[in-house]
Every structure is written in C-alpha cells, then in structure tokens.
Image (cartoon, helix red, strand yellow):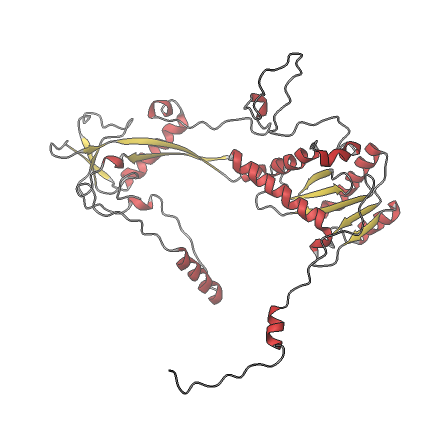
Length: 397
C-alpha cells in the first residue's frame, strides 16, 4: 500500500476550467427559412480557387451560379477574383434573355469580390436583392459551398481515372457541372423549366459518351452501360503518348537515339564499367533499355529519357549480392530539420544528384552484356565488368 500521498479533495459544483475547455460552437440549423418557388428567384454563388496549376487558358479560379429552384448550375473560369463583377453581368444577361425572367435575389459570402460599391450599386439599379452571409459562417451559403465540394470531388476523380495532368482541371470542372445539369432523375423533373445555358438545345460534354443513333429494331440484349468509342475521346486530348517497348522501335526515332547516347555518355563519365574478356566461371547478366517520356505539370514534354537497366532478377543471392538496403532519411527527420530551420530562420538548400545510386562502388564481381546499339567494334565477344552499380541490380535499389 502506498503511503504519504497527498489527499485530493473533490471539487464541489461545476468545474469552471472543464466548462471553458469543453465548450463548442452551437450547431448551425440544418433547415432553411425560405426556398425559391420559381426559376431565377434566388441565385447562389461562390468563387473557388486559386488552383496551384493554371488551366490551358491560364485561369486559376472558377465561379458557380446555382439556381435555388431548379438547381441548374453555371460555371465560368477566371484568372483573377476581380473578374467576378464582369462575369456576373455576363451571366445575368444570358439567363434573363433566355428565360424571360429576372434575377430577384443573389446570395453570396462577404468576399471583397462581391462586397464592394460597384457590385452593390449595380444590384440596386437592377432591382436585385443582394444577400451576404455573416463573416466566418459559410453555412449560410451552404448550397454554393456544398456544390463547390461536389464539383471538385468529381473533377479530381475524373483526372485520376483518366491519368490526366492537373492542367486539365478546368475541363474536368466543366464536365462535373455539365453532367448533373442533364440529370433526368425523378427528383429533378422540375428542371425542365430551367433556362438554357447558352440557348442551345444540347451540348456535348468533353469525354461523355455520345447517344447511339435511333433504331427501329428492338435489341434482344441490353447494350453495355459503358463502351469505349473513338467519339468518347476528350477533344482537348487529341494526341496519344507512345513510348517504344524495345530497342528496335526506339532506334528508328532520333529523340530516343539521342536519349540513349546521353545515358551511355553519363555512364562512361561515371566510370561505371570496363571492357573485359568473358569469364568461364561467372554468370553474365543481361541488360535492356527502358524508355520513358517525362512531362511538365501542364502536360507538355519535358524530356525523353532512356535508361539502361540490368536484369537483376537473374542475380544469385550470396554470390552476386549479400545485403540490399536503401539509405533513405526518415520523413520525421526531414520534418524536424525543416522545423528547426524555420525557427532559426535558416536557409535550406536542396540539390539533386543525377544517378545517385550509381555513384557507389560495388564489392562483388559482376559482369553484364554490352548494351544494344553500343557494342564496341572489334570487341563484340567481350563483356563489361561493373565497377559501380547499374539500375536494376540488387545493389541499386
């Protein structure tokens, strides 16, 4: 039994510290006091951005306009937030002429792009009631906030599914807005009275499957829900990136020949191997070329890379290698270093070492074949003894 412990007295009544530490914001009401009963009676709007990667047209923002009654959504892309007023006038002119109705109420947050004298004066002259939310209360503009989230989730999913560069985010956002606008579910039948987006009967969304032509014959089987057709290609993706799978294909193209020459030049500069006679008691490992096209963030070609790799899967443990490991710093260590540098206001310099894993010498005696296209004349029967590692070996993770 423990002795000489201090006696703890129970706190009588409410603990003031506990009340202060556990208090939270009162839940925001989930319901709404008023909903529109006609098209354009209430328009929700919000700006999303900036995006890290500009679009093809150098846009970094997009703005949504959502009709409260029909849930019809319009999207416009902008380079700066200051374009909101110009875009709103363009949107107002479009929907009012197409529908024959007038916008009565506009609901937005209190951002400077909405809350300024020019915007307020225009709304007053046009008879539009401009409702703004309370600062730091995005729940009051919940329709726009939730729509932004839905659109961005759909856009990210489409880019991920098709492995498209981030520069295509605007096309993905447009498609994410276009598709729900054409929803024909029972809960959205009232959208039939919505105003046209631009006066056209229908628009083809980028990447969406086209409708099959009408047929007088009744099909015996239900057609597949999703098919891959030539008409299903995004109009902005009008090219395909082809990378050679073997040396015979690559040698026919000048860019890949130059890439292989650069790789061999780097290897020889690094003093990676030496030409020698073929040993009788040693296994010789084969090599092959790997080709990869590196892209920039906007999808443009950065460089064509050819890499010579060894067929390390044929190495024998205990003979060609013993232990394998990758000396990589832990992420926690890097974070701690950055935190200390930020606290001390130090500068951090970053550098990249080309072929970093290939700079270390290897202890084992390893032989590889001469690479295709770069076989030494007069020494076709000879092989290469490695002084340093090649990619693909167990010694080069």
